[in-house]
Length: 499
Ligand code: NAP
Ligand code: MG
Image (cartoon, rainbow, N blue to C red; front, side, top):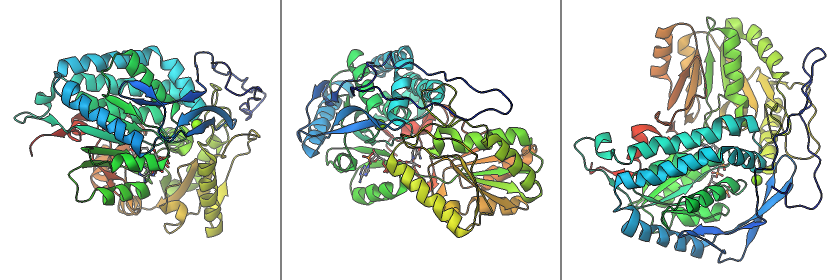
């Protein structure tokens, strides 16, 4: 891309943490050349680009520089209405009647195009959202392509997925996604919906619309029939207009528990099918027989991956009392080697916080931890002057009642608690309103199974963390929502099987 849309070049921050000894990392910055960002983006409706009826646009920025990247259309209810109408027509006339084998061809084509343009999409994802390029390049975008490939494979085999039933698509799917994995969450939503014969209207998060807009361009280039995929950008109100639109058959929402609850109450009494993927407060349980150095890596990955903006982050560490001090020492040492800095630097471990609002939310919760009497540890690290940042943070002496042990922080903040035996570990792990993820570190296989049976979590990782595969269903219990994404179970959310 031409560096950015602004006239004056912005000084890029670089990772500033020195390694022990004389070794330091030289910056290794990914070029933005493969990316072209337009000054302004319209709405992608019925296979074409349209101006918003409101005549309004809003800026999207790079959170690591606060530099404006582009302007994005703000869709109002009239735009949402046009998008839903286009999706309805496409469902009835083209996509619904099309054979699964034909649908699969489009999905395979889109998946291949994502692979071909993976570098460009990764860079844009990092620019618009602030996550390290290492993660968008090695995780988000390859996973997104994998979801499309996986679901393309199901499109002509749906009767085998549900033997004895006659699964039918639901119709128009309204999908609303958050900003933490913008392109990947889009793929999690769009791939199963289209594979099963539904059409889509999607609203991305306000701070991260650019890769969704790039996806719309890919759909256009892939020749996807008009109206099959529609994109309405905008703020929460646009999302609300979309999920409450009367001609929508299915709502799939990923975001906060507060908004999820609101949507659930708005949809009560309607025929709309709903899935909610909401927040989490995952427990990472480390027993005294675990391979401690591996566990340290797992725990660090579990909470500092994507700046901790991860619904299934292992944000509570439950460590067996006998190894607490040893384990916390190791963790602190590891934290001090994390490199916080410019997300396009390939050395960066922890990038920018997605928005000022999120940075302020993290700050407020961290201050509450200090005020409640927990002990804070933050490694020394120099943060860039501009942009939104948060130092990797560790709290010890945390008790169950502290807000930092109960509320989702959605930032690079780990709360450490202890337990004495497996019963207490389970009780403490389950002591939150959430139920999305958990991790167990122990060398005893029987204990892993015993724990997995008792933990209230949609996914339990054993001696690893944050492992994903399109064939493996993901979703929550309790206030983490309901419904599954991925795997055969994920298809069910988009199908009427008659039962
Ligand atoms: P959020 O505020 O709930 O927003 C999510 C999406 O909903 C955004 O596109 C947002 O638009 C839109 N929205 C806001 N108000 C709405 C309304 N009244 N009706 C319909 N849509 C509305 O959540 P967030 O802060 O962006 O995302 C972080 C949350 O997502 C965390 O709690 C995290 O745990 C959760 N999450 C869950 C999963 C999972 O699979 N369980 C995965 C990723 C994230 P704006 O962007 O304009 O506000
Ligand atoms: Mg942005």
